Image (tube, rainbow, N blue to C red):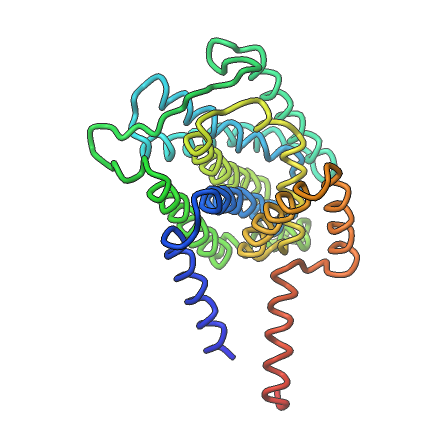
Length: 319
C-alpha cells in the first residue's frame, strides 16, 4: 500500500508539472489561483490545525502581502521574485506585533482580536488613498522582470511554476516545523496548554512565533496574488475571505497541511461550478460545508487516508 501511495504522489506531481502543456489558458488561470489559495489555506492550518488558534482575520495576512507586493512592484521597480518574498517577510514582521497583542487573550477573545486587526487594516486601506488607492485599490500591478532576468516569470506558465514552487516550499517548511520539537510544543498547546506551561514552556512565545510564521506564509500567498491578478483591493482584507479560508481548512482536513490545499482546490471548483448553475451558489456550498462538519469532520484528506487504510486492511487482514 505504501507503494500505491507513493505512486499516487508521483502521478499528482507529474500532472501538476505537465499541466501547462495540456490545459487551456482559462483552466491554467484557475489552477494557478487554486495553488495560491492552497498556500493561503495551509498557512492558516499552522494556527488552527496544530495550535488550535482560531483566527477570524487571516485575510489581514493575505491582503497585507498583496498590497505590499503591489506597492513595491508599482513604485520601486523591484524584480517580481524579490518583491514577492519581501512582501511575505514584511507580513511576518508585522504579525509579530499582531501576535503579541492577540495572545494576551485566549479562546473566542483571541479570535475576535484577529478579526479586529483585519478590520483595522480594511479601514486603513480605504482611508490611506495615497498608498493603497482607497476603494479603487492598486491597479495595473506589473510582473517586473528587473535587471537580474527572470523573464520567464512574466508569462502565465512561468508564474504558475513560481506559485507551485512557493506552495511546495511552504509545505516542506511547515512539515519540518510540525515534525520538530517546536511542532511538538504546538500540539501540546492544542491539547492542553496548562500542562504544556507546567512543563516549563513559555506558550505565549510559541503562539506569537506560529502567528508570525502563519501570517508570513499567508502574506506570501497574497504577494503572489497581486501580480497574478494585476491588482490589490480592499476585498482581500474583508472578513468574508477570512471565513472562506477557514472553511477551506475545515473541509480539507485541519492539522494535515496537505488537506487545506485540497480544501482550497475543492472550494474553487465548487464556486465556479455552482456559480455557473445558480446565483445562489453560496447557499448550496453552505449545505456541502454543513455535510462535511456533520458527517466527515476529518475533511477530504481524512476521508482519503481512511479509504487507503481500509484498502490496506482488506489486502492484509492481519493488520
